[in-house]
Length: 456
Image (cartoon, rainbow, N blue to C red; front, side):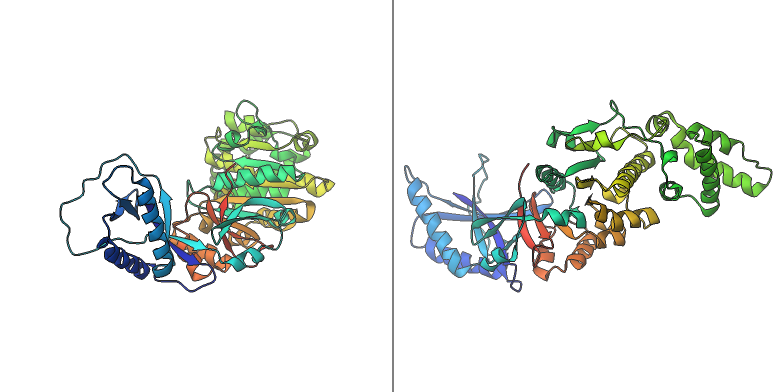
């Protein structure tokens, strides 16, 4: 029989020396090995960018499985006394043959490299109430369901974690649960990952393009703000764009008209010539075949039919130009938020923004207005990112529900720890969380807790 050796850290206690406790357990096994013929091997496996330890209990005999199982149970009981913060988690034994040496040196190396937070019994009382279940926490070896309040969704959600840590599963789970609570959900899918997880959602992609016209928005300032931010326009370029877009809007023109106006700008002076051609170069992606496909609609579409759908995914992965992809996502957010602000729709909306660092890198007036005002009109944002340090501090500050999966970068760990007021023991495990494990901080929970997210 075999078991993983995992350190336990109580969430409400100071950090413990699990290595010393492991040494106590090894000492107890040494004494025990002299009294029976069961053998113990503690191995530390090094590979896959990490090290982890396990204990193997075995005996050379026939029909003695029960005896080995009984010995394993005895070891677990001993561990609970001499090493209360070392958990023996049973695992299956592989079919690989590991050659053991005939003799050993006098140096022991078994290390506790895995650490998990063990929720004390009092933790159960910290989850005041919830109506959107997202997972469970373990309290004294008992699973306790946990979740967030649907009303807190409008205070915005942040889901953070390294690649492969479980972010998209968490976002998909929230989307599905909130649909059941009467929300509509719109997902800006940067990599095209969500259609497999949410097959019941309507998908807009290369074969079913949702066409926009940014020149038809009522608020020209937001259009200029978005274009200036994504295309990194200088102040003179921004001013020239404002003049041209204003003319096109008055004449109810199109992107083609914008291009022609720009082409015909009088460039006799070197200054205006430089501004004109630099602006043309930066606007060029809008005038390509892909740009015209996305942005040359006669009118912006009526959102009544879109928002009557039971969940929508915008698969953006077919837009190869990353600036076009970013522009499209921001203009979709602009279109939907304008609709809600003008009509105060009855059905609340969650917008899931995957790879959010691509949209919210810097602060600008449109982003600030979006994050601060849309909640009043029934829209909640779910910011999903592997790099919180790349997101505007104002956006981070305004996510009141945070779900943090494994995160490796020291600067990302520090930013999240400070924004969530994490105790030192939780900070220390942020890079050691298993896939699907997360630290949850929400208004309905008094202090951050460690949970296991449900698999969708």
